[in-house]
Image (tube, rainbow, N blue to C red; front, top):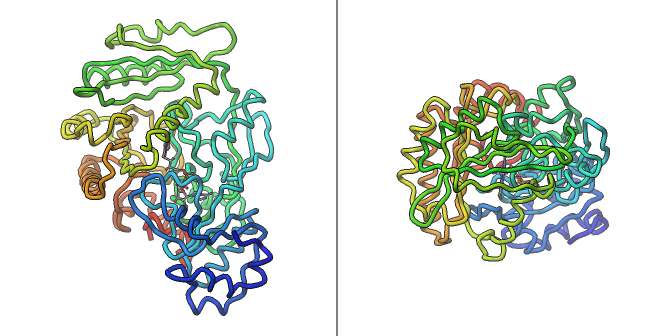
Length: 474
Ligand SMILES: Cc1cc2nc3c(=O)[nH]c(=O)nc-3n(C[C@H](O)[C@H](O)[C@H](O)COP(=O)(O)OP(=O)(O)OC[C@H]3O[C@@H](n4cnc5c(N)ncnc54)[C@H](O)[C@@H]3O)c2cc1C
């Protein structure tokens, strides 16, 4: 690590020290030195780490990694990079699957140290965007409060999920995480520090939520809070096929029987298992009448499983799978995930065809095909794309393939691309954490009617296209 004094004192020396493919472009050295209060990491290990993400599919080495201490640091870095025409990408927790937080030959801003929780009020919390949802929840829960929507895995950063949407079991009730933001502090692609909300700089607010980091780096977020339930009773129901699973999912969604609703097609020893996962919140001793919530459902009732956990234990349950995958090494192998939303009207037909062609190895014993309906009216962030129907289905190939053979990974990425084209042709929409290449033309089509909004905001806030090259939107 190079500290501030070194950097301030020897901009050129630093560039030379990097050497090799990471050397500073010669012309850049004539510009003023960069001064920030945070740290610069340029050792091979740090650059290697910023060249990778959870996907382990693509690798793009930056020239420099900065660990900012403040929004002012980020603004200084962006302005410094802008005049050198260096690309800049924020990195939250690096759980992208296709290099979206990388900046080849540019600067990665590691948000990890900007993780403070500043203020908690009964209806809101103010956090730095590098905080993980786990850190946010740990701060709010002692006050009996929670964000209304948590992702299944809490090790993601606030800035990272707000860039894509942030979906969880409570999304049908409460929207995406992007729908539960009250205000944002942003450093734009031209280095301005701006505050935005529904009332103030609305265009920026709308361009940043679900905007793939194209217009600004979120430095601080004011997030909505609601009273947290004390306990969660969660039930898993199993079905013999996708059709009966889907019919019951539609029923329980329509009747709002669960506070959280998800589901999956799970790999089994000799085929697939079809599962609904519904959760009911409750307080004190008054346990909910689960039987009433299950009335009339056609699941294989003898296989049903129930858990009853404190809210925090339920919210962090994914950590057990994470620990297992870290222990067996599969957390660190390639994850060519593919995530989408299907139109409610043809979802079952489209998914059936795709699942028929999947092998268990495509998903891996610890993977799953996430499959559940959403009420789209709860989703309001303009850049968060959804099929234009009242119900959409989450359809995600969460792959933990047993093989990390590069040829197999490459073939999977190619199949992901083909799947994308197939689903797009059926009116489906990408959830932009998927692992396959997208062209600028693909993104134009993806954003559809929202594209002019993003294009205009880009021209206004990141005119030199400095930010977030990993998505290849512009
Ligand atoms: C195990 C696992 C579980 C997951 N579960 C869910 C889930 O339940 N629900 C869900 O919606 N998604 C889920 N995801 C996907 C996840 O939300 C996205 O990959 C998310 O972008 C990752 O967040 P991150 O902090 O790791 O971001 P990174 O990978 O670090 O960054 C993602 C993108 O956001 C940009 N970015 C990061 N910080 C900022 C910022 N402060 N301002 C602007 N742009 C920024 C980056 O430049 C990059 O383009 C999961 C991923 C994994 C690996």
